[in-house]
Length: 311
Image (cartoon, rainbow, N blue to C red):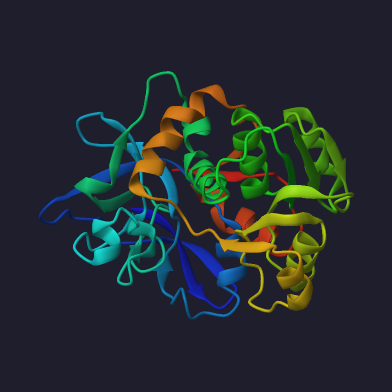
């Protein structure tokens, strides 16, 4: 079968690889859409978290041999530790992520645990279903922030996660949502979806700010633009460095919350939420063009809001 394989630092290639065989409590999934994530574009430049050769792709949906249409929760937790038993599977110390620690969805077929499958409603098509994983991330971040309906919300970064945060915030009843991005094209998408204000940087103060970029400067900005007592939720993983005024955070009781992935319940909730969201901001490409599209995105030479690969 064909697969897009991470073969060396900064290199992905289409290869013919051995077909997959399911083990106990596993199923073979025929992939219908697999999204390219920004974490993959950054992550393959310096292997470590992802080690080549690897079939990446943790955002994918597809169908089983018997025609069951499903989305896949790529986070596989142990299920027995104190965190898992408390419902915090995304924090499991021994969690495994499909597409990172095991082969993922950048292929015609992939083996997944049966427990990772979630049925898709007939009302959602494959292109929209391919965005469920980013929506699940946004839904988790919204809940980490305390589900702040009727609040002023700021979002830094109008990439897929930022746009998903915008959609979840609007659906959740946010009073006002401002988005910041250096890209005019991404800002335009945010306006079309319903952002009340779009600029290259946040202006004014906000009750809650979601940083969907994750650089030292965006993290600092997310704190600077909070009201006293406000909360910033950090989702972005662009860099590990941060430099901010901790004294100001203390004196004005500003809270920093990390947000990673989602619980299994939140993933299911994202599937139920998806049909009433816009989700019109993806572009689908054949898997055969995967290396070309991935490399262009990695080098900043291509600007689809979200690229989905279709085997």
